[in-house]
Image 1 (cartoon, rainbow, N blue to C red):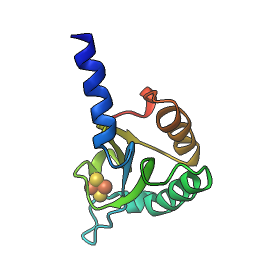
Image 2 (image 1 turned 90 degrees about the vertical axis):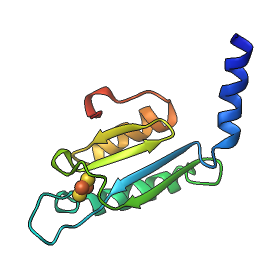
Image 3 (image 1 turned 90 degrees about the horizontal axis):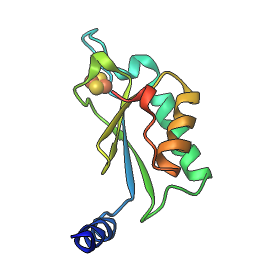
Length: 116
Ligand code: FES
């Protein structure tokens, strides 16, 4: 059984185009309702993408940072989700992003205090 799980884990890595795919909601609502873009999510997206590029994390077979439309968790925002881990985060600032990159992206440890 252990051999099966080891094989499956390796197969999952081979099957994933990116090891981690980060989606950051940058949705802007025009109707005055709460949205991530009102909480500087576009600025955070730019920061995250540039940081992952500068750290040489963003590449084929590595990390990908993408803009996302509304992820339907607006009242909890600003939010991001990381796949294939299916971990959602709420962040406040660039320090939170640094922590997510250093702990989750690089060391595969969930940042519990930011998880939603
Ligand atoms: S506006 Fe970001 S989750 Fe809806």
